[in-house]
Length: 125
Ligand SMILES: [Mg+2]
Image (cartoon, rainbow, N blue to C red; front, side, top):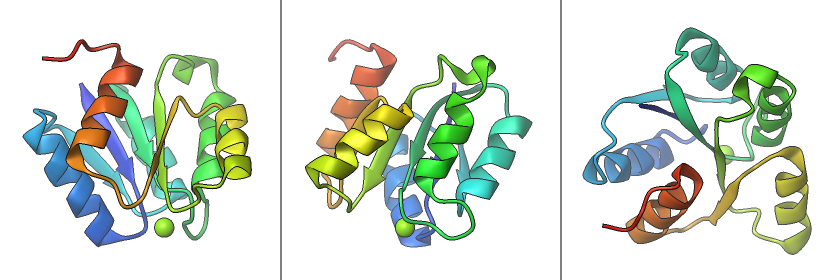
Protein backbone atom coordinates (compact mmCIF):
# COMPACT_ATOMS: atom_id res chain seq x y z
CA UNK A 1 0.00 0.00 0.00
CA UNK A 2 1.27 3.40 -1.02
CA UNK A 3 1.03 6.52 1.14
CA UNK A 4 0.61 9.98 -0.38
CA UNK A 5 2.26 12.78 1.62
CA UNK A 6 1.35 16.34 0.59
CA UNK A 7 3.03 19.34 2.23
CA UNK A 8 4.66 22.49 0.86
CA UNK A 9 7.43 22.19 3.45
CA UNK A 10 10.10 19.77 2.28
CA UNK A 11 11.29 19.52 5.89
CA UNK A 12 7.84 18.46 7.07
CA UNK A 13 7.55 15.96 4.21
CA UNK A 14 10.92 14.49 5.23
CA UNK A 15 9.79 14.20 8.88
CA UNK A 16 6.56 12.46 7.86
CA UNK A 17 8.29 10.18 5.32
CA UNK A 18 10.97 9.20 7.86
CA UNK A 19 8.33 8.50 10.49
CA UNK A 20 6.32 6.41 8.03
CA UNK A 21 9.46 4.42 7.15
CA UNK A 22 10.04 3.65 10.82
CA UNK A 23 6.44 2.44 11.04
CA UNK A 24 7.04 0.15 8.07
CA UNK A 25 5.40 2.27 5.36
CA UNK A 26 8.21 2.71 2.85
CA UNK A 27 6.19 3.09 -0.33
CA UNK A 28 5.53 6.84 -0.30
CA UNK A 29 4.62 9.34 -3.00
CA UNK A 30 5.04 13.06 -2.31
CA UNK A 31 3.47 16.29 -3.49
CA UNK A 32 4.42 19.89 -2.65
CA UNK A 33 0.87 21.26 -2.96
CA UNK A 34 -2.69 20.12 -3.58
CA UNK A 35 -2.24 20.14 -7.35
CA UNK A 36 0.77 17.85 -7.15
CA UNK A 37 -1.03 15.67 -4.64
CA UNK A 38 -4.05 15.36 -6.90
CA UNK A 39 -1.81 14.50 -9.86
CA UNK A 40 0.02 11.86 -7.80
CA UNK A 41 -3.29 10.33 -6.78
CA UNK A 42 -4.34 10.00 -10.44
CA UNK A 43 -1.01 8.42 -11.35
CA UNK A 44 -0.88 5.97 -8.43
CA UNK A 45 -4.11 3.97 -8.11
CA UNK A 46 -2.55 1.93 -5.26
CA UNK A 47 -2.42 4.90 -2.86
CA UNK A 48 -4.17 3.67 0.28
CA UNK A 49 -3.99 6.70 2.52
CA UNK A 50 -3.45 10.44 2.06
CA UNK A 51 -1.61 12.58 4.62
CA UNK A 52 -1.94 16.24 3.77
CA UNK A 53 -1.02 19.64 5.10
CA UNK A 54 -3.68 22.37 5.12
CA UNK A 55 -1.83 25.60 4.21
CA UNK A 56 -0.19 25.24 0.81
CA UNK A 57 0.04 27.37 -2.36
CA UNK A 58 -1.88 26.67 -5.62
CA UNK A 59 -4.32 24.20 -4.08
CA UNK A 60 -4.52 23.98 -0.30
CA UNK A 61 -5.22 20.85 1.72
CA UNK A 62 -8.89 21.61 2.28
CA UNK A 63 -9.43 22.06 -1.46
CA UNK A 64 -7.57 18.80 -2.09
CA UNK A 65 -9.77 16.98 0.43
CA UNK A 66 -12.93 18.33 -1.22
CA UNK A 67 -11.64 17.31 -4.65
CA UNK A 68 -10.85 13.79 -3.45
CA UNK A 69 -14.20 13.41 -1.68
CA UNK A 70 -16.05 14.55 -4.81
CA UNK A 71 -14.88 11.36 -6.56
CA UNK A 72 -16.64 8.08 -5.79
CA UNK A 73 -13.52 6.05 -6.60
CA UNK A 74 -11.67 7.67 -3.68
CA UNK A 75 -14.49 7.25 -1.17
CA UNK A 76 -12.57 4.57 0.74
CA UNK A 77 -9.19 6.34 0.77
CA UNK A 78 -8.63 7.68 4.28
CA UNK A 79 -7.32 11.23 4.64
CA UNK A 80 -5.31 12.55 7.58
CA UNK A 81 -4.85 16.32 7.85
CA UNK A 82 -1.57 17.43 9.42
CA UNK A 83 -1.59 21.12 10.19
CA UNK A 84 -0.99 24.01 12.55
CA UNK A 85 -4.69 24.95 12.19
CA UNK A 86 -5.66 23.23 15.41
CA UNK A 87 -8.65 25.39 16.36
CA UNK A 88 -12.01 23.74 16.93
CA UNK A 89 -13.62 25.51 13.95
CA UNK A 90 -10.81 24.37 11.64
CA UNK A 91 -11.08 20.79 12.85
CA UNK A 92 -14.85 20.79 12.23
CA UNK A 93 -14.35 22.32 8.77
CA UNK A 94 -11.81 19.63 7.90
CA UNK A 95 -13.99 16.80 9.20
CA UNK A 96 -17.01 18.14 7.29
CA UNK A 97 -14.91 18.19 4.12
CA UNK A 98 -14.21 14.48 4.58
CA UNK A 99 -11.01 14.24 6.59
CA UNK A 100 -10.90 11.00 8.62
CA UNK A 101 -8.39 12.12 11.22
CA UNK A 102 -6.47 15.18 12.26
CA UNK A 103 -2.93 15.81 13.55
CA UNK A 104 -1.82 19.17 14.95
CA UNK A 105 1.83 20.19 14.41
CA UNK A 106 4.17 19.65 16.09
CA UNK A 107 3.46 15.96 16.56
CA UNK A 108 5.33 12.91 17.81
CA UNK A 109 5.93 9.74 15.77
CA UNK A 110 3.61 7.95 18.21
CA UNK A 111 0.73 10.28 17.33
CA UNK A 112 1.22 9.71 13.61
CA UNK A 113 1.32 5.97 14.25
CA UNK A 114 -1.91 6.02 16.26
CA UNK A 115 -3.83 8.17 13.77
CA UNK A 116 -2.59 6.10 10.86
CA UNK A 117 -3.60 2.85 12.55
CA UNK A 118 -6.96 4.36 13.44
CA UNK A 119 -7.85 5.30 9.85
CA UNK A 120 -6.45 2.06 8.44
CA UNK A 121 -8.20 -0.08 11.03
CA UNK A 122 -4.89 -1.65 12.10
CA UNK A 123 -4.64 -3.15 15.55
CA UNK A 124 -1.91 -2.01 17.92
CA UNK A 125 1.14 -4.23 17.79
MG1 LIG B 1 2.08 24.32 4.69
